[in-house]
Image: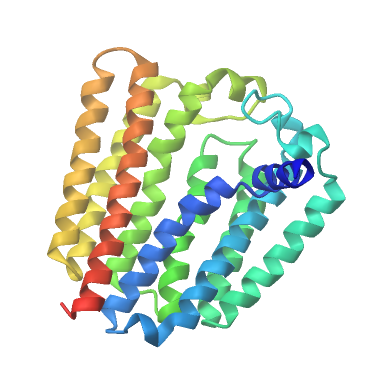
Length: 298
């Protein structure tokens, strides 16, 4: 039993299962929104739903494993990451690479049985996270978060494309933009709270390199654009648009009010907490709204 628990813990940290779970929520939001938009019943696409969930989870796990392999040198420096299995040696680098490759192949294959577009988007999400973000920009530029956000915003597109192979609907584009821009305030807040870790590891996060004021200004710009993106949801649902505007507006107000207290740590903590609340409420609302429409033919 002890060995099983250790193995599970090792796999959890290697594949970053917490990130898998959190990214499945926006994927399911995109998926259910597509079901609602194109008048499908849940039973019409049950196989696609299952494959989309499995495929997306495996690809995200593969991305986490690849990231752990490449970043093991800086992970060893940072307090938050120095206990990762690829740092401690609980799992070999060779085994981690093979695990990542196998999961990636199976994940992309699973998505290909929904639509080829979904499989392509899954591959692009993996590629963007591993190459442009992890291997290129993460250690070189303060815009690493922006590059990484493209990969992080793929799940809604993957979910939608698994149901209907056309991702040009304005509401989905709005959801994608929101998913992209959500990540900057969220990860800036983490970088402020973990300032010493990132500085020690020479990871050029915006707050570490450019300071709090620049981070504050950039955060608010992104929040404003994110609020405006909520209008795209109105092409499908006035209610979802209003939820997006309300949640985004509250976030913007919190950012301004908390910053004026001249306590950067408190400001970052407020942004971080609300970012989690925003994601949970926004995407859960989309899922519930879509399911209600599907089930009751609204």
